[in-house]
Amino acid sequence: MISIIIPVRNRPALLDKCVQRVKELAKGEHEIIVVDDASVGGIGMQDSDVHVLVNPVSLGPGGARNAGAREAKGDILFFIDSDIILCADAFEIVNECITSQKYDALQGMFSAQAAYPDFFSVYKNLYWNFNQSKMDPGSYNLCTAIFAIRKETFLKLGGFNETSLVGEDREFGVLLQKSHVRMLQAKELQGTHYKSFNFKSLVLHHFQNAVNCGTFILKGTGISMGNRKSEILGIVLIPMLLLPIAAFFFVLKAPHILFWICGLCVMACLFLTKDFVGYCAKQKGVLFAMAAFLMHALEYNIAFVGLAWSVVRFSLFQRKDLNFRFESIV
Image (cartoon, rainbow, N blue to C red):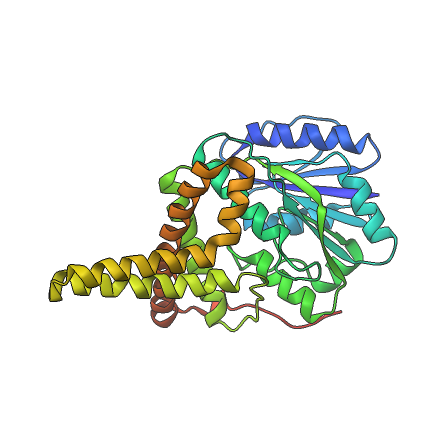
């Protein structure tokens, strides 16, 4: 039996869609556990087919998942976020991969189909889908939005680190790797991600993600960047090319040099993003791809600022309770 564990905090409408889809696919053969992580006003979930756990105080995403795992009766734990609508054959894929004894864990991915039609939501969804589809099948770069694991393995590892309020999934991925857990990036295990963005929320999202990634690197977590070396190069290179633009324009008053540097920045960004931009063009057309290119170039600069801030924050405000644990238990 599979135990589906859905942590949620303050989004009951999306949760209802998620649970109804899970019930439709489970057909009464699997256990459904919803963990309400101290939602304001509760989630209003009253369903005899769903086991609802309520945390009186928020334990964070890792703590909420652990609480569900402790109550689970199934041999396989299937964690999904409350804004995910699973593909039709999700449970068959999980069963085939894990019960066959070939793998101990598997991670799914977001489908290319966006739940919301606006540019920023579609752009971000394609960005996620593109990167996940290019990930090596044996990568441990973990995202727990769609993630299944043997219960025995999960309990031996001690579950997610409940002191990590962000990045607990990345940390757990490192623990899986160090413990030699057999994990698969299952490209066919997909779900539609009901996540909406506007310009402001997208900028803040990338800034915070860069801060988190920078902190992980500084802590020496050993987190793999997978197939995203060009992303890292762009984050460093593009802003470094843009900085001389301001210097030449404001100090040397050399517009012809400014022109060449701008051209060099555009060419470098095109080279580094050509695969993603081409993917956007294939999915949504040339005009969308052009806008995606501009947004991606902006994100390089946002990420550069986020990484720089992570260095400052880590140097000045490092706290012992943010330390990560990576001991191998299995």
